[in-house]
Length: 392
Image: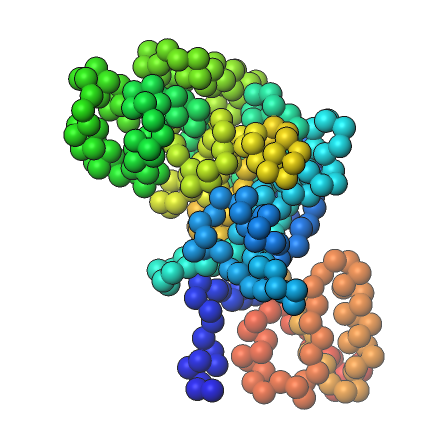
């Protein structure tokens, strides 16, 4: 084995060094505390799932799944998201009497990368799933909870973009007549290729009025007033239903006092094809990728033979850390350097400080190669050297 290969990691995999681990821990603690305050209960699911069940239901493209075989020849996957495993768990064991479930998770998920490009193949997510509640109040709750959790983590400048997949689908079906044509436009929106979208619309054999309706979709972004503009572009039952749901959502979000964080974006399309209604993404001003996303997925549990409405969100911890900016390195660890004759005294002092909640390293002086380099790592140093009573 060459030295180069010895220190290489699989494509997209990352090590977490102590400082970054501390940052993750603080963020994780803050968000989990807030989520628990809203009555959500944390669960864990296996890292490995069956390809035929969770893998197929996850809405992550096949090329991004890590696959392996078990000893019985079944194809397994490393979980590519948490929504599908939680849907499996809820359908099989938890969702029994039709009453809402409020579940939460903090877990790593795995998505294979075709090339390096800086994208992680394993990343941590924190999120919630509200299962069994089909009301707009449930959508407002998960959005407001997401905002509260991000604020608790220390994020100050961010925006939640809200769309409705039902509105986009209704408009495309009304104008284009079939799903195949609609899929082409959906792909442009998903890739945020608005130039390509415009050019494609102009090339379609449609009336000028219908072309204008499709082009107008790109302008349906902004504050609450956009909902009224969107209503003017659609008169089908499905389209009106989506508009009414957005109006209701804004009324609920007003009650939560979070409208300052919200904008409408009816161009929003997710790579998760199980969304059925309201969907959303959260952006911070200094990074170009969404920190997290969520929405309503009322058909997913039916894949596990237990139909139930559901909504939820997931936040990517790595992107949240990037959005928070470079934190100050906090290394409040006290080090007690001792010689053999002061060993007992050093242990007693360390135990006393640890009982007070301090972090204490106990370091025998004979184990140190460079005293200056060693002690530089710590915020405070106590020396217990030589015979007791002769000073430190």
